[in-house]
Length: 262
Length: 305
Image 1 (cartoon, rainbow over the protein chains, first blue to last red):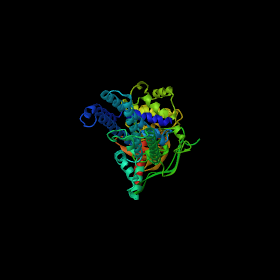
Image 2: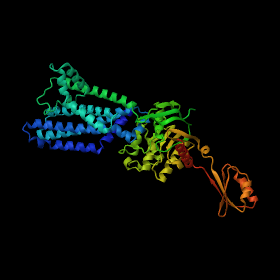
Image 3: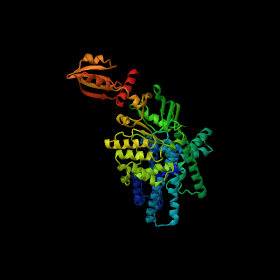
Image 4: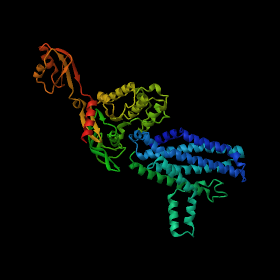
């Protein structure tokens, strides 16, 4: 665990200094700050639009950061030969991979915390500070954090065997499909009118693709008027789903990385 | 005492369009403990691949390898060895002490005094506040050596440790490597800097196209130098009459030049010449250099294959 932690903390140190990530973060924060000005243009209720826009900005910015941060993580270590000095020490490959992943998640957590703080500040400034509303609002970034941790696991998994460019499209594609189409596959698999073959196919796709859409429930623009009948069970189950998926991806990544010649 | 490194028929092959290509082919290598061993070869000869196999970073296709008596890849051995790669990169945002703390934590070493001592050993103790991004090449190489000493290793793998450094940094690194031998460590150096290797190594191996062509003590491998004696006041017939083995006699504008193996007894020849009242102008030993041996080995192999 000592080695894992050392690698994770170094990864955080590197990540929070990467200019490209800081620029993406800055752009996200700027959009959040100007979001209230854009909200008044909408015909829909200002509060709903503001919440939806700001949560959308956090989600999009975090997703871009998660992909850019993780697709280069392992290839960079190999290219710069830092991996050799680390693996020549009593460090197992799985420790290296888990350390890099945890570092990425911690760095993402830090950046998302900053965006959440901006969200709370800007929203309170605009709508007044109401602890209950704010409490509900920050559940959005909390769910996004699990979503991004899952996305980071997808990218880390791919980075054990594909180039950063291919990984960018694979991880990005998995995120898009898992966000936009998973609910469709889910409905297709459950529908009575779906032919059996299509049902099985939809179920397979549904199981194989991480369901990123699970974590978008808080956004009133994406899910207008949606209510969760039992929020604690829902959050617990989706968190557990994310964790299981992350562990599965990391284990698969470890198996590939163990055999890989670096 | 087990050898520091021992390989038996160690082979690494890769699949290519033309079939299986061996980068390292049936490597038999023995490095004794406490020696500085030079692993030489042209670019692409298989030096780094061999080191990576010995470190367990890549896997051999066939053959066996032992490091400090244990099979390669054994994690226990990783506590006793260290590696300095060619042109290493270190996390640039870190300072020297932070870098040592990071690598130390991989061993569970948190001893601040040790970090200080190592910084002093590599002469970076005055640059503690500088980040790696502010380091010169020589400083980066020295912090690399410091990190490689964190675990007090019995065996160090140094891949091109003086590559791209200025002469002063060269000397600093060379002195450090020599101090490792004095401390009883084994050093395995892969290098192109033949003059450097000649100065510090006890034994060398020359690898070319994945095959070890020569291996042995430097003193043995560099045997076969020549001695040139310039002389006048003596006839060519007299010199020929000395019946010296493998000796060439050439005419110079002001006398004759005897070119003979270094094994010949020079003093005996000089005594004979003085006995003839000959005038000895110069005696020049032409030592065989590692560079000659290297070029001879690599070009001969190239011509024969």
